[in-house]
Image 1: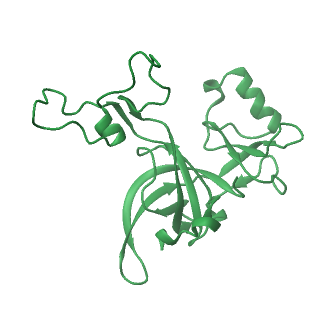
Image 2 (image 1 turned 180 degrees about the vertical axis):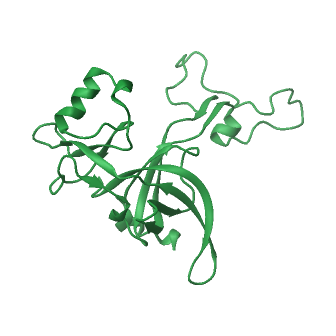
Image 3 (image 1 turned 90 degrees about the vertical axis):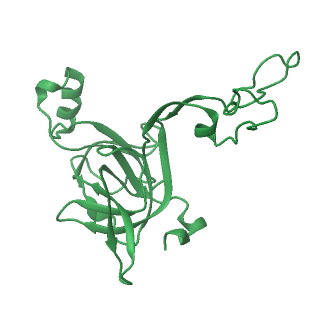
Amino acid sequence: MAGKAIVAQKVGMTQVWNEENRVVPVTVLEVSPCRIVQIKTPQTDGYSALQVTQGEVSEKNLNQPQIGHFDKAGVEPGKQLIELRVDDTDGYEIGQEISVDIFSAGDVVDVSSVSKGKGFAGVMKRHGFAGQRASHGAHKVHRKPGAIGQCATPSRVFQGKKMPGRMGAQKTTIMNLKVVKSDTESEILLIKGSVPGPKGATVVVRNAVKASINSGDQNE
């Protein structure tokens, strides 16, 4: 579980030059200040988390439960509510703003978002299957998966079998990415490498939970 986390919007990718004058591909994340709406603790909810919101929205676009939730917290209504799981909520207060300055250059982070939807895909694209042979009697089966189970026993296909289906559009986390730059004035966070999701996607950035294991050497 993370010690600190924040919500951002994916802007796109670009490149910067490091101190050795080498090109570094980075993903640009726009990080508007997050306002804490609710604090969840193990005593009241069974786990530790911060419920935050960003931006501004008119009350006419909210239903009564949402309006009551924001009024109870005394926080200006935002576009959406997002929960950030953290190790400890001590030191946080309702209404407090969390900005991009919680991360600095050199930090190792995990980034989560909903990946791009690819639609219905076969096993070769979805799972990397090699496909069938291209000769010696193979007829219109070149991209098929082949046998998917036995006949009489067990007379069914095992759950979890890799088969064609919808690809993408699922929560994806990339671990141990390096923060290249944290710009408080522009509310911009530059992450080395790619980040899941299309442009405009909501992204959760948290400090890496396995950084001590992998040490982020691949990001150096």
